[in-house]
Length: 172
Image (cartoon, rainbow, N blue to C red; front, top):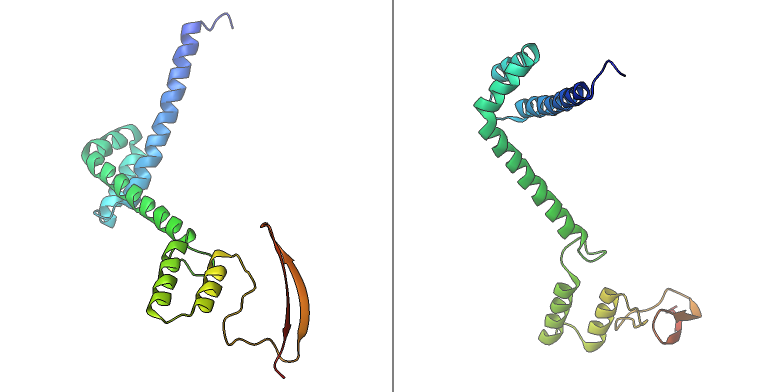
């Protein structure tokens, strides 16, 4: 180690980091060449040959000639990715079981409108609201019947402060 001074160590580290930086730029340029829609196949092949055969000069020329459009393509791809993520979040944030058609607030407002217009009775409104909010009070919609020949009792407890029991009989 005595024949390798500290300044040479720093110089070697600088060369190594510049080489890594150049590799990143090389992959960025090659990916941009293939991503570019405004160039034909022959132009893309020419740039690839130039970048591979004369790597330092080829990358320098590409960044000088096409650097601005390279940045525009990056921004457009970032916009598309951002829009896709936002759409995914909107779809995933929808109420479970409704296929992402709206939030709980929208569905509750729709139920209130149906009740106000007389399309739903108070009993049907409460049952639909309980189903939507997941509170499940065991209230069945008016006119519903159990399965044929079934009877039973049950107890249900939840995270709330009460318990409920119910009996039901089917229509034979």
